[in-house]
Length: 219
Image (cartoon, rainbow, N blue to C red):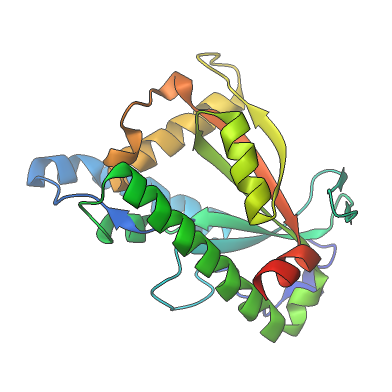
């Protein structure tokens, strides 16, 4: 993180959260403790932090640098080493808001909160001079089962769907292990989101939006 690192100091890099589940039985909750601990540990390692204390926010962020070159649909050119913001679900909030929501109501709630979180993120970046180095915002998601439908949704949100992979049960693929972790996190924090989904159904996706487009759409 050397390239642009000095410009990023002071940017608090503090995932999609809004709890949607009924109270978890005691023994079942105890069974989730190892996953909660792993989630906490990964946040420390990856530098995932909140960027606002607004209760509407369901995202945390981390500052990272691009590992590849990429041309986004609005013409923004991402070069290896460019500064990025990665989005991460705020899992604890997935656990505590709208616990008894039906699937459709739950989806609409998350979509609304996701948009609100992007507005809050844009406002935060506007206030931080160090954020001027950020070229784009990206997220990796594993809860997708229909790529075409998800692609249409991300386009409406202003994001480019730039990569997807369905590793099924290929143990040598990193995406499978990423999906397994995502599956365990969903089972821990939002088990209702797994209804009708198996581990091998999940498609690993990557979405991007340029800093300029984020400002245009969520400023």
